[in-house]
Length: 265
Image (spheres, rainbow, N blue to C red):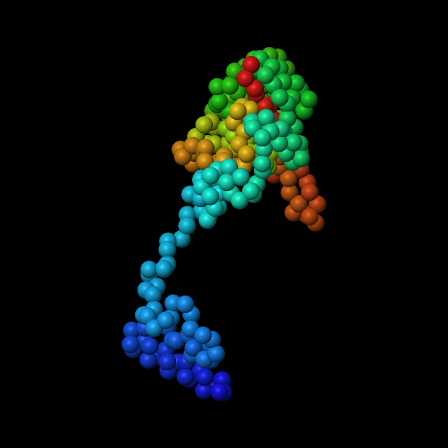
């Protein structure tokens, strides 16, 4: 059969089917009569299209369950068909997290207790020659900053102008979660005022509880407070490769990221 004749025959069949209330031409016309009828054809009426079309999945709901659409609801990577990281207990998660921090160019110091964290913070700031320091409103950050002593100028966050913020040498915040498989830090806006401090000064020092390290992004998102209108994910120092694909660190944000991993005393 010529192409024009076949096209006219198909169009005629479509019009006839529409006149009878059917939604599509018979399968044998579309296939030139060579294909056998499908398993649903068997002489019965075609299924109602609305009965087989479901609502599109909500990707954010799937992420909060710890996986993507169609995967297991378990937040564990093992529950997602073996994808992601596989660790042995909290120690394995912590080890993987510190390894990934180093891989993305961040520095990490494990400290035990608040007093040791204060000493490590002073050494870290002195090591990058930071003098003007601004901290978030997190109580732990404020206690450690006010215990630094001489040699540092503490800038008040609530009275800091944009230009004064850009003139600061370091910003100190906490992080609510760490992601082991990528060495990523998660900062929630509902927990503290930290977003500008983590993005503007050339050095960013982050305090993170060792008990708040998750295996994967899905695990972390399942724990994020619903009150947070913004979530900042930080993976290593700021870097770009816009110019001739050559990586450059510190162009759009901190060029030094130092994590103080706080263990219970």
